[in-house]
Length: 154
Image (cartoon, rainbow, N blue to C red; front, top):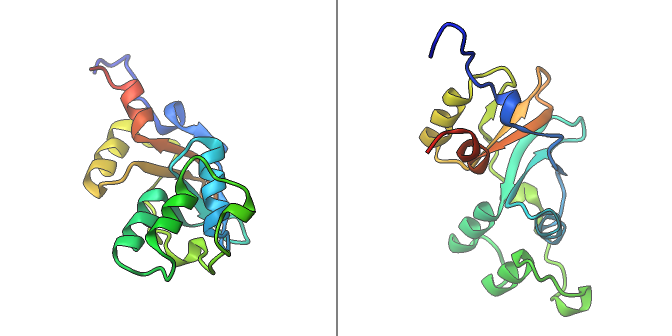
């Protein structure tokens, strides 16, 4: 890096205004949000808008394999598939909400952090997304593995 080259910052690569869900969001609502936006995970916010977790397809699959859901695994995968049928096509809604399976210690970054440092953090923590938060811990952006692949040379 030369003296004239500034490091790439998180604000330069993040997706602004990330799609978030609230605590209490049902698994069905989460599945519809993910499929409708072609994403695999979302920040979860409390009633004050502050980040409390991240819910992803990976979190759901992990809970299924650990046997923590009372519903059959097929039901959960049906919900997570991109081809959600009508309400009548699915079994009755089980009482599963994001609070039951979200990651409660999401990896976060500030908008002024160097992208290279965040990329290393993602690799160290083995995560595919980092939630960008403001000083009050409110989500203002998201950086995914794909975002990083777009900015780093091959």
